[in-house]
Length: 226
Ligand SMILES: Nc1nc2c(ncn2[C@@H]2O[C@H](COP(=O)(O)OP(=O)(O)O)[C@@H](O)[C@H]2O)c(=O)[nH]1
Ligand SMILES: Nc1ncnc2c1ncn2[C@@H]1O[C@H](COP(=O)(O)OP(=O)(O)O)[C@@H](O)[C@H]1O
Image 1 (cartoon, rainbow, N blue to C red):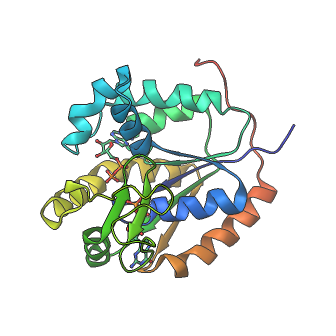
Image 2 (cartoon, rainbow, N blue to C red; image 1 turned 180 degrees about the vertical axis):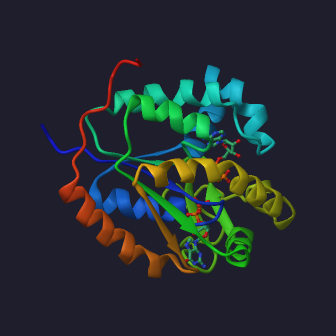
């Protein structure tokens, strides 16, 4: 059986989860699943799930745990023969416990980035809503200002990336993430990285993954919920 590897990345909004996940997926061939992107995609496609979660996502409120697990766990079961990386899920202790019942993570990456850095980055973050591609006017600007590189469609800014919403989101992130981080610490799978530049953090994550992926294969996840 192929070696499988299951990881999650955690960090406040703007900490570089999406940017680093893209590098991990490219370098290590993991399937990447972003809860925020998945939810926005469902809303845009007006699926049953999309209708259900729309009011929460639009108000930057957490989607209730039972809804989130009902959406994410079946997706992960579909990926049961693959290595994957989760971004944005699990967000709460209850979500982490539900995920634990499906399978144990091999690695959780936690990003600690100073507030001022987050504020600067997010005030300059532009996204292509349909694909989830993310740009930053200084760090990774689009080839044509205001347009997505692949489709040429317009880029937008999320309202909740604006400074007035950011402080509240950050405080909320810390409260909710603490028990999740404690859980993964107690399981011995948590690795934290601090810094202000993704390019300086990346080599450490790269080297950690190189080591872990070649020494710690995991079993296949359960395909049936117990
Ligand atoms: N200036 C700067 N911007 C960065 C760096 N790393 C990521 N970004 C940008 O910061 C914003 C937030 O990054 P993102 O990966 O979307 O963070 P997430 O909210 O944790 O998924 C995006 O616009 C990125 O392009 C960095 O090292 N320096
Ligand atoms: N695991 C989750 N639990 C509850 N709600 C979630 C979860 N992941 C994403 N969401 C919802 O989707 C929105 C966007 O998520 P995301 O793209 O991760 O952005 P952010 O990191 O800015 O919160 C969140 O504000 C929330 O409404």
